[in-house]
Amino acid sequence: MREDRLVLVASRAEHQPGPSPFSNTSAESLWDTIKNPELHILLREPALLELARRREPGILSFCENLVDCGDQECWFTGLKVLAALGTFEAVQRLLAVSGSLNPWDRKIAIQTIATILTSAHREAFRRVVRLFAVPGMLDVTGWTSTALRVLRAVCEECGITLICSSQTIRETAEIERPRLSSV
Image (cartoon, rainbow, N blue to C red):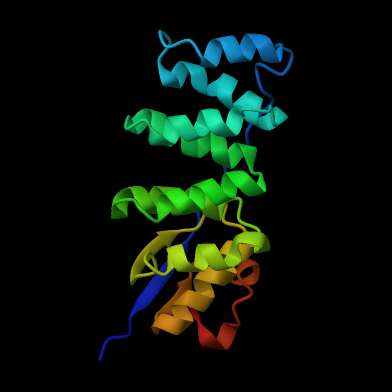
């Protein structure tokens, strides 16, 4: 009988954002930019990310509108900005959204959540990741140690063996060597 396996992989180079091109721009000017409907959402994204970085009041509700608007590019930008915001409320919103998505969009949302997850949202993430933990291959680049430990626990409950492609993943997820093999 073939064992169910989930292979965890991570790309070598994680994207580290550089300094914001809008770090010296006033909040008022950034708000004018993001509220301009004539600008495509991808052109407004850097201003949105800067406002999230600054934790500007009102950015959470603006992102909620992006996530709910029905446009795929706005939705994805909303997820990225909520992740950049990284507040307790932003993670709650990401978790709430992820539960009602189709499988492909849920995967994107879970990948986003896993990069900012803290222990405060561990149980809610466990419920969402339970729908996501299936045999195959999973890129865990940038996942927090909390997210990896939750995934490990869910896989153990579901009888799925984790295979780590690197020692770094094994150490981050606190996975014991005898339970897993390395690829």
